[in-house]
Length: 173
Length: 205
Image (cartoon, rainbow over all chains, first blue to last red; front, side, top):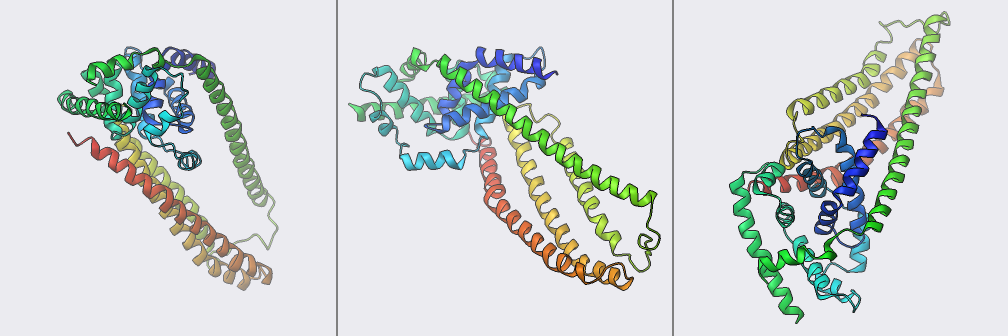
Protein backbone atom coordinates (compact mmCIF):
# COMPACT_ATOMS: atom_id res chain seq x y z
CA UNK A 1 0.00 0.00 0.00
CA UNK A 2 1.27 3.48 -0.92
CA UNK A 3 2.03 5.73 2.08
CA UNK A 4 -0.23 8.45 0.65
CA UNK A 5 -3.24 6.12 0.44
CA UNK A 6 -2.42 4.70 3.87
CA UNK A 7 -2.43 8.26 5.25
CA UNK A 8 -5.72 9.04 3.52
CA UNK A 9 -7.41 5.91 4.90
CA UNK A 10 -5.98 6.61 8.36
CA UNK A 11 -7.29 10.19 8.26
CA UNK A 12 -10.77 8.97 7.25
CA UNK A 13 -10.91 6.21 9.87
CA UNK A 14 -9.71 8.42 12.72
CA UNK A 15 -12.27 11.08 11.88
CA UNK A 16 -15.10 8.60 11.39
CA UNK A 17 -14.32 6.52 14.49
CA UNK A 18 -13.04 9.29 16.75
CA UNK A 19 -15.75 8.33 19.27
CA UNK A 20 -14.25 4.86 19.74
CA UNK A 21 -10.77 6.29 20.32
CA UNK A 22 -12.14 8.93 22.68
CA UNK A 23 -13.96 6.35 24.83
CA UNK A 24 -10.97 3.99 24.91
CA UNK A 25 -8.56 6.77 25.87
CA UNK A 26 -10.75 7.98 28.73
CA UNK A 27 -11.53 4.44 29.85
CA UNK A 28 -7.88 3.43 30.05
CA UNK A 29 -5.97 6.57 30.99
CA UNK A 30 -6.33 9.74 32.95
CA UNK A 31 -4.50 13.05 33.23
CA UNK A 32 -1.35 13.44 31.15
CA UNK A 33 -1.49 9.77 30.12
CA UNK A 34 -4.53 10.42 27.90
CA UNK A 35 -2.53 12.26 25.25
CA UNK A 36 0.12 9.53 25.36
CA UNK A 37 -2.46 6.79 24.88
CA UNK A 38 -4.20 8.70 22.06
CA UNK A 39 -0.87 8.82 20.17
CA UNK A 40 -0.43 5.09 20.81
CA UNK A 41 -3.93 4.33 19.47
CA UNK A 42 -3.35 6.46 16.38
CA UNK A 43 -0.09 4.65 15.70
CA UNK A 44 -1.86 1.29 16.10
CA UNK A 45 -4.63 2.35 13.68
CA UNK A 46 -2.12 3.73 11.17
CA UNK A 47 -0.11 0.50 11.27
CA UNK A 48 -3.27 -1.58 10.95
CA UNK A 49 -4.53 0.12 7.77
CA UNK A 50 -2.79 -2.30 5.33
CA UNK A 51 -3.97 -5.32 7.37
CA UNK A 52 -7.67 -4.55 6.93
CA UNK A 53 -9.34 -7.15 4.77
CA UNK A 54 -12.24 -5.89 2.72
CA UNK A 55 -15.40 -7.70 3.61
CA UNK A 56 -14.65 -7.52 7.34
CA UNK A 57 -16.67 -5.11 9.46
CA UNK A 58 -14.64 -1.94 9.80
CA UNK A 59 -15.99 -0.87 13.20
CA UNK A 60 -15.15 -4.30 14.71
CA UNK A 61 -11.67 -4.02 13.22
CA UNK A 62 -11.13 -0.55 14.71
CA UNK A 63 -12.49 -1.69 18.09
CA UNK A 64 -10.06 -4.63 18.10
CA UNK A 65 -7.07 -2.51 17.10
CA UNK A 66 -7.85 0.25 19.61
CA UNK A 67 -8.67 -2.03 22.55
CA UNK A 68 -5.65 -4.21 21.80
CA UNK A 69 -3.36 -1.17 21.79
CA UNK A 70 -4.88 0.12 25.03
CA UNK A 71 -4.64 -3.23 26.81
CA UNK A 72 -0.98 -3.70 25.91
CA UNK A 73 -0.09 -0.01 26.20
CA UNK A 74 2.86 0.69 28.42
CA UNK A 75 2.47 3.89 30.36
CA UNK A 76 5.59 6.02 30.01
CA UNK A 77 7.53 6.62 33.17
CA UNK A 78 7.46 10.39 32.57
CA UNK A 79 3.70 10.58 32.52
CA UNK A 80 3.37 8.15 35.38
CA UNK A 81 5.67 10.32 37.46
CA UNK A 82 3.64 13.40 36.56
CA UNK A 83 0.54 11.61 37.72
CA UNK A 84 2.11 10.49 40.98
CA UNK A 85 3.47 13.97 41.61
CA UNK A 86 0.13 15.52 40.85
CA UNK A 87 -1.65 13.04 43.12
CA UNK A 88 -4.69 13.06 40.91
CA UNK A 89 -5.54 9.37 40.99
CA UNK A 90 -8.57 9.61 43.22
CA UNK A 91 -11.83 10.09 41.31
CA UNK A 92 -13.22 12.39 44.00
CA UNK A 93 -10.10 14.55 43.84
CA UNK A 94 -10.58 14.81 40.07
CA UNK A 95 -14.03 16.13 40.67
CA UNK A 96 -12.81 18.78 43.06
CA UNK A 97 -10.72 20.22 40.25
CA UNK A 98 -13.62 20.54 37.83
CA UNK A 99 -14.96 24.04 37.24
CA UNK A 100 -17.94 24.90 39.39
CA UNK A 101 -20.06 25.50 36.33
CA UNK A 102 -19.72 21.88 35.19
CA UNK A 103 -23.00 20.14 34.72
CA UNK A 104 -24.04 17.24 36.89
CA UNK A 105 -23.98 15.05 33.82
CA UNK A 106 -20.34 15.86 33.20
CA UNK A 107 -19.50 15.05 36.81
CA UNK A 108 -21.33 11.74 36.63
CA UNK A 109 -19.49 10.94 33.42
CA UNK A 110 -16.14 11.69 35.06
CA UNK A 111 -17.09 9.40 37.93
CA UNK A 112 -18.19 6.70 35.53
CA UNK A 113 -14.86 6.79 33.69
CA UNK A 114 -12.99 6.77 36.99
CA UNK A 115 -14.91 3.66 38.06
CA UNK A 116 -14.28 1.99 34.70
CA UNK A 117 -10.56 2.65 35.08
CA UNK A 118 -10.63 0.82 38.40
CA UNK A 119 -11.78 -2.42 36.72
CA UNK A 120 -9.37 -5.14 35.58
CA UNK A 121 -8.07 -4.37 32.04
CA UNK A 122 -10.10 -6.98 30.12
CA UNK A 123 -13.25 -6.14 32.13
CA UNK A 124 -12.66 -2.47 31.36
CA UNK A 125 -12.50 -3.24 27.68
CA UNK A 126 -15.66 -5.38 27.78
CA UNK A 127 -17.72 -2.75 29.59
CA UNK A 128 -16.55 -0.02 27.18
CA UNK A 129 -17.58 -2.19 24.24
CA UNK A 130 -20.91 -2.93 25.86
CA UNK A 131 -21.60 0.76 26.51
CA UNK A 132 -20.85 1.39 22.83
CA UNK A 133 -23.55 -1.20 21.97
CA UNK A 134 -21.16 -3.72 20.46
CA UNK A 135 -22.90 -7.11 20.24
CA UNK A 136 -21.81 -10.12 22.31
CA UNK A 137 -20.78 -11.94 19.13
CA UNK A 138 -18.53 -9.06 18.07
CA UNK A 139 -17.04 -8.76 21.57
CA UNK A 140 -16.31 -12.48 21.53
CA UNK A 141 -14.61 -12.08 18.14
CA UNK A 142 -12.61 -9.03 19.26
CA UNK A 143 -11.31 -10.67 22.42
CA UNK A 144 -11.15 -14.31 21.34
CA UNK A 145 -13.63 -15.35 24.05
CA UNK A 146 -16.80 -17.41 23.79
CA UNK A 147 -20.11 -15.54 23.62
CA UNK A 148 -21.30 -17.22 26.82
CA UNK A 149 -18.13 -16.13 28.62
CA UNK A 150 -18.73 -12.55 27.47
CA UNK A 151 -22.32 -12.77 28.72
CA UNK A 152 -21.35 -14.10 32.16
CA UNK A 153 -18.64 -11.49 32.59
CA UNK A 154 -20.89 -8.63 31.52
CA UNK A 155 -23.71 -9.60 33.86
CA UNK A 156 -21.25 -9.45 36.76
CA UNK A 157 -19.59 -6.26 35.47
CA UNK A 158 -22.83 -4.36 34.98
CA UNK A 159 -23.81 -5.11 38.55
CA UNK A 160 -20.39 -4.20 39.86
CA UNK A 161 -20.33 -0.89 37.98
CA UNK A 162 -23.88 0.02 39.05
CA UNK A 163 -23.02 -0.69 42.70
CA UNK A 164 -19.82 1.35 42.49
CA UNK A 165 -21.66 4.26 40.88
CA UNK A 166 -24.39 4.11 43.54
CA UNK A 167 -21.74 4.27 46.23
CA UNK A 168 -19.78 7.20 44.80
CA UNK A 169 -22.96 9.14 43.96
CA UNK A 170 -24.06 8.64 47.55
CA UNK A 171 -20.67 9.88 48.82
CA UNK A 172 -20.98 12.99 46.72
CA UNK A 173 -24.33 14.02 48.17
CA UNK B 1 -27.84 4.41 39.96
CA UNK B 2 -28.77 1.43 37.79
CA UNK B 3 -27.24 0.37 34.50
CA UNK B 4 -29.89 2.22 32.43
CA UNK B 5 -28.80 5.46 34.09
CA UNK B 6 -25.19 4.62 33.33
CA UNK B 7 -26.10 4.12 29.69
CA UNK B 8 -27.94 7.45 29.61
CA UNK B 9 -24.85 9.15 31.03
CA UNK B 10 -22.77 7.39 28.37
CA UNK B 11 -24.93 8.89 25.62
CA UNK B 12 -24.43 12.40 26.99
CA UNK B 13 -23.01 15.06 24.62
CA UNK B 14 -20.08 15.48 27.02
CA UNK B 15 -18.96 11.99 26.03
CA UNK B 16 -18.20 12.98 22.46
CA UNK B 17 -14.71 13.76 21.25
CA UNK B 18 -13.64 17.37 21.01
CA UNK B 19 -13.02 18.01 17.29
CA UNK B 20 -10.33 20.64 17.91
CA UNK B 21 -8.48 18.33 20.29
CA UNK B 22 -8.73 15.47 17.78
CA UNK B 23 -7.19 17.65 15.06
CA UNK B 24 -4.41 18.63 17.45
CA UNK B 25 -3.76 14.97 18.28
CA UNK B 26 -3.72 14.06 14.59
CA UNK B 27 -1.22 16.83 13.78
CA UNK B 28 1.01 15.73 16.65
CA UNK B 29 0.82 12.15 15.40
CA UNK B 30 1.73 13.07 11.81
CA UNK B 31 4.67 15.19 13.00
CA UNK B 32 5.82 12.35 15.22
CA UNK B 33 5.52 9.85 12.38
CA UNK B 34 7.66 12.05 10.11
CA UNK B 35 10.28 12.39 12.84
CA UNK B 36 10.36 8.61 13.35
CA UNK B 37 10.71 8.02 9.61
CA UNK B 38 13.62 10.48 9.38
CA UNK B 39 15.24 8.76 12.38
CA UNK B 40 14.78 5.32 10.79
CA UNK B 41 16.19 6.51 7.46
CA UNK B 42 19.21 8.00 9.20
CA UNK B 43 19.80 4.76 11.13
CA UNK B 44 19.43 2.60 8.00
CA UNK B 45 21.74 4.93 6.09
CA UNK B 46 24.34 4.73 8.83
CA UNK B 47 24.28 0.91 8.92
CA UNK B 48 24.38 0.77 5.12
CA UNK B 49 27.39 3.13 4.99
CA UNK B 50 29.24 1.04 7.56
CA UNK B 51 28.53 -2.17 5.64
CA UNK B 52 29.65 -0.60 2.35
CA UNK B 53 32.84 0.64 4.02
CA UNK B 54 33.69 -2.75 5.57
CA UNK B 55 32.81 -4.71 2.41
CA UNK B 56 34.79 -2.26 0.27
CA UNK B 57 37.81 -2.57 2.53
CA UNK B 58 37.59 -6.36 2.40
CA UNK B 59 37.15 -6.32 -1.38
CA UNK B 60 40.24 -4.16 -1.81
CA UNK B 61 42.29 -6.55 0.30
CA UNK B 62 41.10 -9.47 -1.79
CA UNK B 63 41.76 -7.75 -5.11
CA UNK B 64 45.06 -6.11 -4.19
CA UNK B 65 46.56 -8.10 -1.33
CA UNK B 66 49.64 -6.74 0.41
CA UNK B 67 51.82 -9.80 -0.31
CA UNK B 68 53.08 -11.16 2.98
CA UNK B 69 50.85 -9.43 5.52
CA UNK B 70 47.46 -10.56 4.20
CA UNK B 71 48.24 -14.21 3.69
CA UNK B 72 46.40 -16.11 6.38
CA UNK B 73 48.00 -19.31 7.63
CA UNK B 74 45.02 -21.10 9.14
CA UNK B 75 47.14 -23.69 10.88
CA UNK B 76 48.66 -20.90 13.00
CA UNK B 77 45.85 -18.33 12.97
CA UNK B 78 42.75 -20.52 13.26
CA UNK B 79 41.26 -18.52 16.15
CA UNK B 80 40.00 -15.85 13.74
CA UNK B 81 37.56 -18.38 12.26
CA UNK B 82 35.41 -18.88 15.39
CA UNK B 83 35.76 -15.17 16.17
CA UNK B 84 34.33 -14.09 12.81
CA UNK B 85 31.80 -16.91 12.91
CA UNK B 86 30.25 -15.58 16.15
CA UNK B 87 28.24 -12.71 14.55
CA UNK B 88 26.93 -15.15 11.92
CA UNK B 89 25.91 -17.63 14.61
CA UNK B 90 24.05 -14.76 16.32
CA UNK B 91 22.45 -13.65 13.07
CA UNK B 92 21.28 -17.19 12.19
CA UNK B 93 19.88 -17.59 15.67
CA UNK B 94 17.91 -14.32 15.36
CA UNK B 95 16.51 -15.42 11.99
CA UNK B 96 15.46 -18.72 13.55
CA UNK B 97 13.72 -16.91 16.43
CA UNK B 98 11.96 -14.58 14.03
CA UNK B 99 10.82 -17.48 11.86
CA UNK B 100 9.58 -19.47 14.86
CA UNK B 101 7.53 -16.47 15.99
CA UNK B 102 6.06 -16.13 12.50
CA UNK B 103 5.12 -19.83 12.32
CA UNK B 104 3.64 -19.99 15.82
CA UNK B 105 1.40 -16.95 15.41
CA UNK B 106 0.35 -16.70 11.77
CA UNK B 107 -2.96 -15.05 12.72
CA UNK B 108 -1.94 -13.06 15.78
CA UNK B 109 -4.34 -10.30 14.68
CA UNK B 110 -7.36 -12.61 14.90
CA UNK B 111 -8.29 -11.45 18.41
CA UNK B 112 -6.84 -9.55 21.33
CA UNK B 113 -6.08 -12.72 23.32
CA UNK B 114 -4.19 -14.10 20.29
CA UNK B 115 -2.23 -10.83 20.05
CA UNK B 116 -1.36 -10.91 23.75
CA UNK B 117 -0.22 -14.50 23.41
CA UNK B 118 1.97 -13.52 20.42
CA UNK B 119 3.38 -10.56 22.38
CA UNK B 120 4.26 -12.88 25.24
CA UNK B 121 6.15 -15.16 22.83
CA UNK B 122 7.84 -12.13 21.33
CA UNK B 123 8.94 -11.11 24.82
CA UNK B 124 10.37 -14.61 25.36
CA UNK B 125 12.23 -14.33 22.03
CA UNK B 126 13.63 -10.96 23.01
CA UNK B 127 14.84 -12.33 26.34
CA UNK B 128 16.50 -15.26 24.54
CA UNK B 129 18.05 -12.78 22.11
CA UNK B 130 19.59 -10.79 24.94
CA UNK B 131 20.95 -13.96 26.57
CA UNK B 132 22.40 -15.16 23.25
CA UNK B 133 24.06 -11.84 22.49
CA UNK B 134 25.52 -11.85 26.01
CA UNK B 135 26.88 -15.38 25.59
CA UNK B 136 28.38 -14.53 22.17
CA UNK B 137 30.03 -11.39 23.53
CA UNK B 138 31.53 -13.36 26.41
CA UNK B 139 32.76 -15.99 23.92
CA UNK B 140 34.36 -13.24 21.80
CA UNK B 141 36.18 -11.86 24.87
CA UNK B 142 37.49 -15.35 25.63
CA UNK B 143 38.69 -15.94 22.04
CA UNK B 144 40.37 -12.57 21.65
CA UNK B 145 43.49 -13.30 23.78
CA UNK B 146 44.10 -16.38 21.64
CA UNK B 147 43.87 -14.31 18.45
CA UNK B 148 46.26 -11.73 19.90
CA UNK B 149 48.69 -14.49 20.83
CA UNK B 150 48.52 -16.06 17.36
CA UNK B 151 48.87 -12.74 15.52
CA UNK B 152 51.87 -11.78 17.63
CA UNK B 153 53.41 -15.23 17.07
CA UNK B 154 53.24 -14.86 13.26
CA UNK B 155 54.50 -11.26 13.48
CA UNK B 156 51.33 -9.61 12.21
CA UNK B 157 50.78 -7.58 15.34
CA UNK B 158 52.89 -5.99 17.99
CA UNK B 159 52.31 -4.73 21.50
CA UNK B 160 50.02 -1.96 20.23
CA UNK B 161 47.03 -4.32 20.05
CA UNK B 162 47.28 -5.47 23.67
CA UNK B 163 45.41 -2.57 25.24
CA UNK B 164 42.54 -2.41 22.69
CA UNK B 165 42.09 -6.19 22.62
CA UNK B 166 42.64 -7.09 26.23
CA UNK B 167 41.37 -3.97 28.01
CA UNK B 168 39.19 -1.69 25.88
CA UNK B 169 37.13 -4.40 24.18
CA UNK B 170 36.46 -6.39 27.41
CA UNK B 171 35.47 -3.15 29.18
CA UNK B 172 33.09 -2.38 26.30
CA UNK B 173 31.62 -5.89 26.55
CA UNK B 174 31.15 -5.56 30.30
CA UNK B 175 29.37 -2.24 29.69
CA UNK B 176 27.04 -3.84 27.13
CA UNK B 177 26.36 -6.77 29.48
CA UNK B 178 25.51 -4.45 32.38
CA UNK B 179 23.16 -2.41 30.19
CA UNK B 180 21.56 -5.62 28.82
CA UNK B 181 21.07 -7.03 32.34
CA UNK B 182 19.44 -3.76 33.41
CA UNK B 183 17.12 -3.75 30.39
CA UNK B 184 16.32 -7.44 30.90
CA UNK B 185 15.38 -7.01 34.55
CA UNK B 186 13.74 -3.59 34.42
CA UNK B 187 11.89 -3.82 31.10
CA UNK B 188 11.58 -7.34 29.74
CA UNK B 189 10.74 -9.26 32.93
CA UNK B 190 8.08 -6.79 34.19
CA UNK B 191 6.57 -6.75 30.68
CA UNK B 192 6.47 -10.56 30.71
CA UNK B 193 4.61 -10.55 34.05
CA UNK B 194 2.20 -7.89 32.79
CA UNK B 195 1.36 -9.90 29.67
CA UNK B 196 1.03 -13.14 31.65
CA UNK B 197 -1.41 -11.45 34.04
CA UNK B 198 -3.39 -10.05 31.13
CA UNK B 199 -3.51 -13.42 29.41
CA UNK B 200 -4.54 -15.11 32.66
CA UNK B 201 -7.61 -12.84 32.91
CA UNK B 202 -8.89 -14.40 29.68
CA UNK B 203 -9.14 -17.71 31.48
CA UNK B 204 -11.27 -16.25 34.27
CA UNK B 205 -15.02 -15.97 34.19
